[in-house]
Amino acid sequence: MTVTIDVGTTAVKVLYFDETDHLVKETSQDYPTDYFGDGCAEQNPDMIVQAVFHSIKTLALTHKETIVLSTAMHSLMAVDKNFNKKTNLMIWADHRADEVIASFKKTPLAQVFFNKTKTPIHPMSPFAKLLWLKETRQGQTLNEQLEDVHWIDIKTYLWYHLTGYNECDYSLGSATGLFNSETLTYDEAILSFLNINNYQLPVLVPVTHTRVVTNSVKNRLGYSHAVVIGASDGVLANISEGMNQPDVHVTIGTSGAIRMTVPRPYTDPEGRLFCYYLNDSHWVIGGAINNGGNVLKWLDDVLFDGTSSIYSFIDTLDFRSFDPTLVFIPHLNGERAPYWDTGRTGSFIGLKMSHKKEALVKAVIYGLLFNLRHVFDTLQSVTGDISEVYLSGGFFKVKQMKALISQVLNVSIIESTTLEQTSKGALNLVSQMKKRLTADYKMITKVPTKEIQDYYAYYLECIEEK
Image 1 (spheres, rainbow, N blue to C red):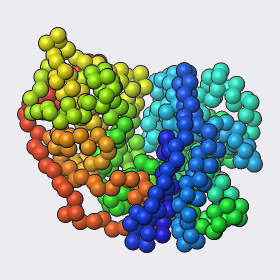
Image 2 (image 1 turned 30 degrees about the horizontal axis):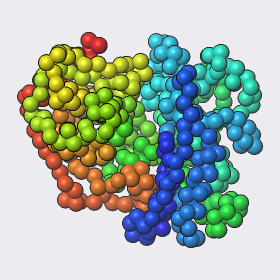
Image 3 (image 1 turned 180 degrees about the horizontal axis):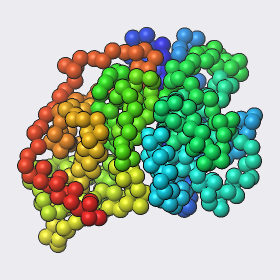
Image 4 (image 1 turned 45 degrees about the horizontal axis):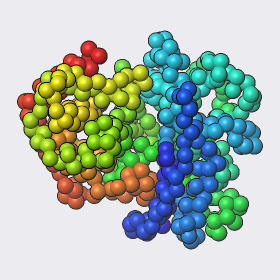
């Protein structure tokens, strides 16, 4: 039996799989994020650890289960030598480093560091957070108060509470902006630039690295469980259908991402895509977007008073017709790939008094999909042509969206039946499950019309001028 623990941005999800890898039971527990006006986004790591232990106890484990961990990327916190927390957890959404990173990206070192790490130069990364601590008065003040500390992520903090070891998996390490993708070690030049050293960081270990829980945890849970350190949520989501190359996954939930599993690290010369390590023969390259279902939620608030009526309204629309002169740029929340620019904004281009609700909704839908297409094209420019993708996420529960994205991307769509992709990826990590036949899935193929192709071309013109 396998128990997967997925520590996400808003909640921990714990799933219990039997010997045949079928989901038997599950539980989850939420925890809050504190947002402040200066770009701060922090969580209490002790609250997260308690949520994990509470969820495990809820499932009433026996002694036979193996526990596998997954956490979100890009978190950072400080602990002392006894692993007592010295700060709260800065999560990926913390963007206090906006100004520092904007300045750093103008220097030659930005491209040098990206080429080494394959992690985009962006405020989300631990590199950016550590640079903020080094180069801003607010950060320096905090840093001076901390004195001699270790810098870790939430996985390492949880791992220490389970096993007593200060370790981090290579997958999460490769997303820190501190990890050299060739040597598979922390990069000494980057650490020196940040005024930190290896001693202050967790020991890097393979994603299948396994330990046994401490006696204290054994007494708390009732049994001595083996724990696999696992990988990051994004990388694991990409192996939810098996560890196969070159599987491509497109996900749109609140935000979104396109990821491809590849046999070696790729470098986008323009720094638009990430490439994160899973193991020596599996890397995941792709791009994440800030704007997905959250933009539809915004539009529902604006046009439908937040009643969620937009979804039934979309069902009534015929997307074969649209105004090709009305373009929506969906960067309401800044944007990650391919720009990695927190300052980008959204807009309507070509908006007239004659445009009604139907035209606005269609423009927003096409804008969201064209934004994804832009990342998709960027990925293809580095890896080569892509003919089919796995599709997942709440956005595609809306009727017509599956066929429409097949047209917009000009690929065949394989509908994934896996709901908890990160947890299934964690399961596959330990079971090395073989890929199921494509016949088990529903495939959709829609050829793009010339009108859609022209509309996308005009969208690209608009974002280049913006």
